[in-house]
Amino acid sequence: FWLIFSSKSKMTLLWCLFFGLLAGFFVDLDHLFDYFMAYGFHWNFQHFIHEDYLNLPGYNYNFVILHDFELVFLFGLIAAFLKNKEKRIFFGIMATSLFLHILMDVVIGSGGLINYFLVYRIIIGFSTLM
Image (cartoon, rainbow, N blue to C red; front, side, top):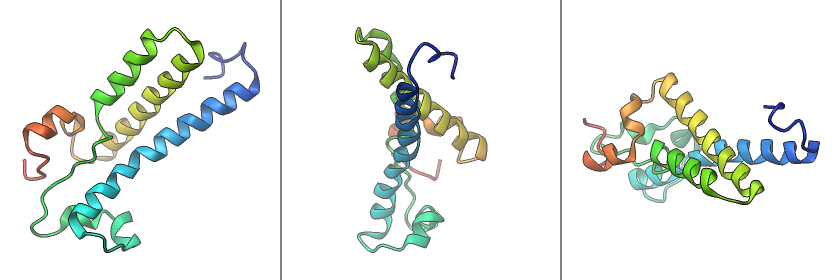
């Protein structure tokens, strides 16, 4: 990573690391949507952290609309075609952070690779029963 930015200032590197970490963290905010769809607006931090909403009887959906390879591809495509170098770097970092986040989710065992394609989840109606 440092080799890419060796000609840049340390401040640029720090900003890139900050946005990369931010993107990797904020992508999980889409779990809030699933939580509120399952429980309504009754907040319980333990249920949220342990993803209890995924095991509720009668609730068989998992939307996680930011956890998809199509978004990685879109950010990468935007990065490839932008002329502004800073914006290219920004979208490249967003694509990389999201890709690494999804890859970790797949490796940890959150349902398999196919479940991280938005088109597939749309086709199955975001159901967890498939």
